[in-house]
Length: 349
Image (cartoon, rainbow, N blue to C red):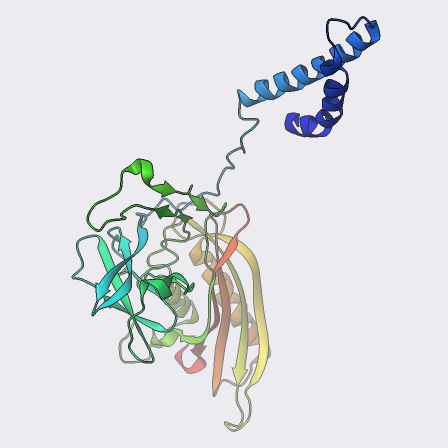
C-alpha cells in the first residue's frame, strides 16, 4: 500500500518540488511559496518514512505462502539434474547427470529426450547417473549444441509408486562461467548464478488407465482365483495400497454389469451403484469414520442387493468398477489414480 501511494502521489509532489521548492533562493520572501514548498517536502518525507517503516518488517517482501503439506511418511528422493558436455566418439556430446542416491522403491533414474535413446556415459558412480543420447533413427550422437535447443526432457523413475510418494517439489537455477577452462573451476565471484525458480505448489500427478484390471488374476501367477466379491476387492486394495504412505485417502466409485447374449454383438451394460467422494481410513488409525473394510463391505452389499433384486444373466457376465483414488495432502482432495476398468468375471465370484 505504501509503494502504491508513493507511485500514485509522487508525480504531483515532484512537480511542486521542482516548480516551487527548487525556485526558492535568498531573495524569496513570499510566505505562500514557503508554505507550499513545505507541504510538498513534508508529503515526500512522510511517504518515505512510511515505506521505511514498512520495510523493517516484511511489508516490502512477498509473504512466504504456506505450502500444502508434503508427504513426510516416507523417505524423499532429493536429487539434482545437471547438463554439460563431453567428447563421445569425436562428438562434443550433451551429457545429462542425475546426482542423488535414490531410496528403495525408485529404481534407476534416467532423463529421456524425445527421439533419442539414453546411453550410460560412464560406469555409474555411487549416487550419480550419467547419460548421453543417440538418435533413434540414425544412431547419431546428440551434440551439446543441439541439445541446448532440444527442449523435451522427461525424468523417469521406473519403480516409483505414486501412493508412496504422492508429490514433488522442483526448482531450477542456471549457472554460467562455472568452468571456462576444462578442469579449472572459475572463482565463485565470476560465476553467474540465477536465483532458484520453482512452482508455488508441489506437483501432484494424476495417473489414469483404461486397461482391464482383472481382480481374479491377482494373487496368483498362473491361475485365475475364485473368491467372494468382498475377497476380490480386498485383494485388489491389498495390492494397490501395498506401498501407500498416507493414513487417509478418498475414494470415488461407480460400478456396472455387462453380459453378452451373442459373442458377435456388443455386450449389454447396466449401471449398479456409485459412491461419491468419501474419506477412508486405510491404515487403521481411526482418523475418519469409514475404514477400508467398511467401504469394501458397502460396495459388496450394494452389488449383491442389485444382483438379488434384478437377477441378471450370469453367463458371459462381468462386474466392472471405475475407481478413483484421491490424495488427502491438500485441503481439497486431488485425484491421484483412476482405474476405469477394474473387473471380475461372474464365474470367479
